Image (tube, rainbow over all chains, first blue to last red; front, top):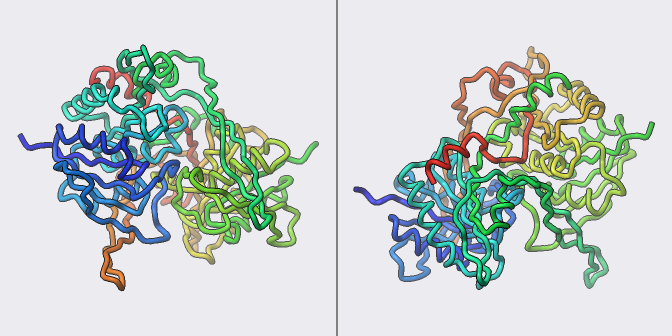
Length: 255
Length: 255
């Protein structure tokens, strides 16, 4: 049997420990090609580079068998460049991450990691975004490894429904708590309550830092937030058809 | 009756003719505050600025009654900054655009214009993104004006379903063809077939320009693409819950 071709991307940059771990796992499943940003691209959502040019260079990052490219573009640019220019054939799987920090609930729409996975599914490739609920550079990516392997194996064997990718979030490691398993969930209704930190620069001009507090308004038992609270891995199927189909008849009355 | 407070944003920048037109229309409906990027931010999707700072300065662009801020951030940053810092109360309406170019079908997920509208709806504000299918700086924004007014009036009067904003696209002006009306539609299944234009810089290094061809795979009569082809204005209700609810049971079998 031919080995699967696996595209690995992320948004924290090609040097991030999360993607290094994901590459080492994927090397056990197939031929791996990495196309990842040359620096942090968190919060870039589904941004693409259309007003300027993109650099992309072949690099050697470690002694693994994977082929790697470092790219100046966004996570979505990386997927487009991989599929339409760098790879000789369409990959069998696209994995993004492992993100340093949560992409559960509303974070999915801001996340470069998840936008790369969505772009993969748009290209017709079974795609998975993996995120760990730990922002630190020294985060422990090992505890979730067993489940990353299981989910990867299942998706390689069974594929995914058309137009759907997976948003997989892994609870942060806590002493005395083990991951209990995997739950398929819906995106919780949650949001960021922003505060802008207003400061004055040395020349006397105002500038802002975006800060915020995550607030979950959703009491449902079937959400990703609830599963993560209960120390399960959450898996949300994500689609790029953003039509609110249920609202079409209402709108016909309003407009 | 208190005049409505209307937030106007876009992704083409505060100088773009599209937003200048939209501001002049909105001045007839209420008190207008503009918070718009200081330069082009097309294709920025739902990007936010978290790794760097944001500038935002009060500016006077013309002799209209509106208050205006020029912002160094993305379209989504503009909405967050407006709602959480600049405005004294939550706006009654958020309008984004008029975009120079289409945001129909899959373009919705790349579009800064539409991401700003989605962010508005996340903040609980009835929000509408307007786009004209004409990329040129000299595009004719007048033909659709009557419908922009009608849709704005309806939304101010009736609001929008929770968690839903509107993606409004206006056909390009063509000699001898009049806009036939407004159709509420679903997002067409369409995609960009990308080609990367590979070039060599003066120092001999490779770089790329992203280019592509838009391809509509969807033969349905209820899509935005079909309505636009038939010279109707398309209105797609857009939601930020990207859960593929229909896929949950399937995934429970696969994983």
